[in-house]
Image 1: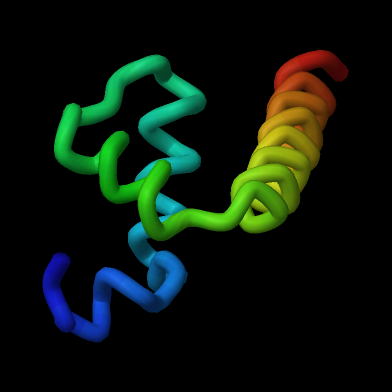
Image 2: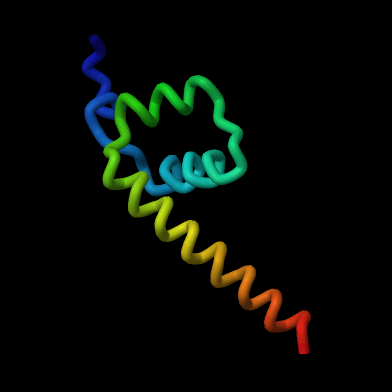
Amino acid sequence: MTDDKTDRDGLSFWELVGSTLAAAIGVQKKANKERDFSRGRPLQFIVAGILFTTLFVLAVVAVVQLVVP
């Protein structure tokens, strides 16, 4: 077991964003997946997933509104 501080801390904001985007398209490096399971908290991923899904749906609706007169 290492005493590295990053092993005890949760994921950074950008690590969480990257993992959320990778999950959205279904691609993830094995090292990142292991990092997520060891350092990530389930609530972080639940909130990030809900936020991403909401923003994605709103973006699709906005594009459709712009395209369809």
